Length: 110
Image (tube, rainbow, N blue to C red; front, top):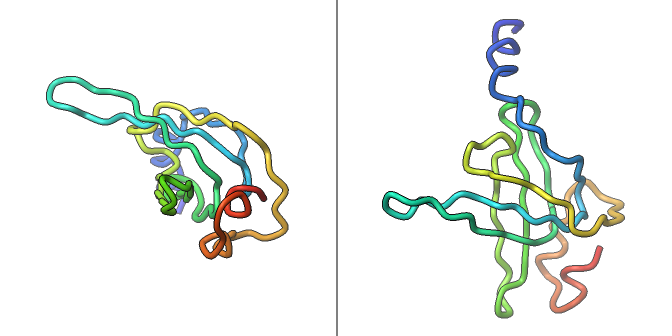
């Protein structure tokens, strides 16, 4: 197990802010378009975090044109440029899957 941790340390050096489930965050991800790379923001509420170390990921949900859109981001992906906390939230649960059934403002405020 120590060998696995040594290998993972090399790839987990990316500095990310502390965010938790319920926070509203903005994730800037790299999108390759031909020979160029552009940055695309995805802003929403963190509804789940799972895993540890290099294998960890988080799920972000937003409402776009009345439809719920969820995206799962690997925490230490090279395609993530930055993560910023827009607004901290107060969640009493570890997973906020109940937001999937809500509409309007109730779906974004935790």
